Length: 305
Image 1 (cartoon, one colour):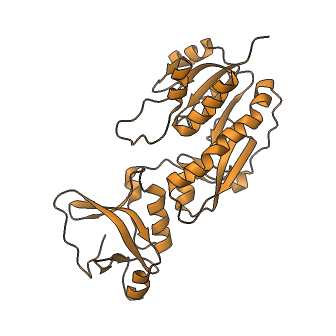
Image 2: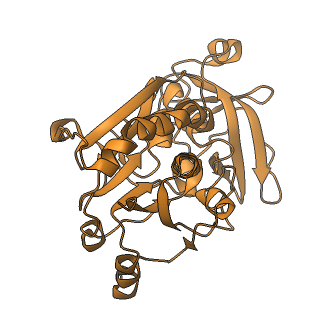
Image 3: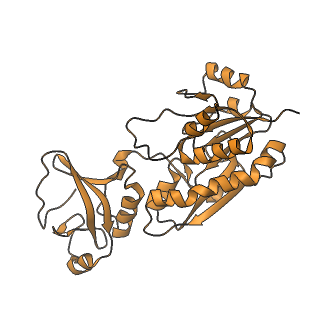
């Protein structure tokens, strides 16, 4: 009996880890459908194309798989099972219906929480203490299909999104290793998601890093750690220049000494160290970078927008 044919959709280091597992096992991966690297994005992670090239797996990078031409190409590959791991585009239901063993996705959250794009960044931004990876059936709605398996890890209140990603990355491989034989045998067990517990978030853009000073100092800190390097970063515009904030302290000796309830949000309380009033206190901006010329002179009492 021939081995089941797996069509792998994937990107990111999660995709790399999961595809590497399948190839190390000797599974019959017939092709990788992935993305070209975005020249405007900092590529700080391994991608599944690296693993595919090592084993001479065909690689395709279509802008969309949901047109008639690509549906025909995918049908010609005769996949028995589709596995999607951090693939960034929606896969249409006509493609999902092709493989007799189903279409399955590895998502970077503990579903039903944080459906949608950039789940780890959103979880850090919201101050979550636990994140995870979930294997689930793919359906028309994003990340809404029945859950097969999931695994979580604890993250710290000062972890950046990259640090959180590194902690949760092994969970994807663990989950897939536990379930791949059942997927290929068609014997996997599924549990419907609780829609009442579902939350959904859209993809994040660089402009979403703008600091809103009326938020609490903890909320501002969570934004900073959720989008700091290697992500585009948190910022505030001052005149024609942009002040990038790569790290901060929401509770430091300076913030406690300088803040008074009369300080309006966004007011500069000190230049060295740079301390700014927030909605409920103050935050010390400890790692900054000016972009744009000329960088303005800041002054105590100045309000940042």
